[in-house]
Length: 347
Image 1 (tube, rainbow, N blue to C red):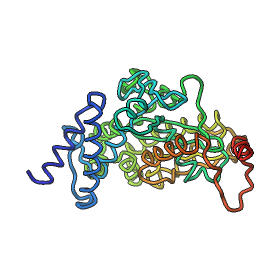
Image 2: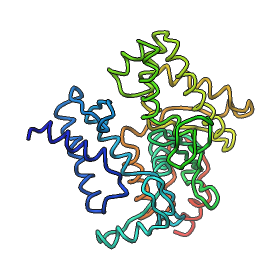
Image 3: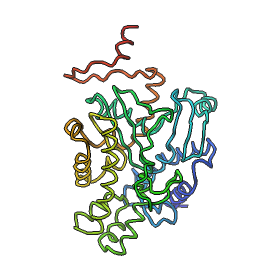
Image 4: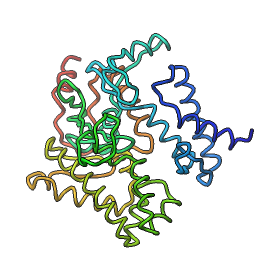
């Protein structure tokens, strides 16, 4: 079997299976397979594409497939405040599972569990935009829509549930079915597969979109190219997507009043014009009291925010005991948070 044939078989198998049906050893092998895909991608370049998911009609580069598989395996976790138990995962259909304990027993090392978007936000606060902000709102758009909020580098945990459910706010009564069972949730309406399906269907009314979607697989890029071509169908769909996103971001800003907002996932790599329209529309929907006090930017921590987030959580949990070091920014006059002052006094 050729290398390309083996890659197709690997991608087909990974695309068809759900993570919740796999034992831990198989999931570990999938992580190794993803690493192999990334190595092949660096060797073969972006000219090689594979149908993914199987029978979807969508062809992705190996780099895009590897990134999607990593997002699926990281999944959305609702964890307990101690970072030991997974309280609820829609992706895996798990409830109250002692994940940290099981990993420690299986691999003989210390483990910590964290909600993936909050982990990314902690990395952005430590190494990215949050270094120059007293507080940071992080919004990640991928297979789902997640939000996390940090103050002085510390994660804010909302109520007993622990995370925001902004992604499950209903925006369309006639929208697609969401993974939570509801209809028309934000993350279902903004999900990559749903948008690609909608664009393909719209191709029947728009030759421009029909041509674009055959050449590109990132919905925001396809829509932005259609808008640049003055295609009315692309403009209609793009305006709706921008409206949903700007409403969600503005609502979060009005609730949390952050000084800085980082947009990650698909938004971090969104086309320049699309991102500019999103920034502008979001600010028009933010309270006038807050409008001049907040900055909205792309997340800056790179292509693998989940990996960097996991490393940040491990450092915080295992070395800093959830009291991360105060960022040292040249010229900054920020007052260290109380926990940092107290820790210095004890030592």
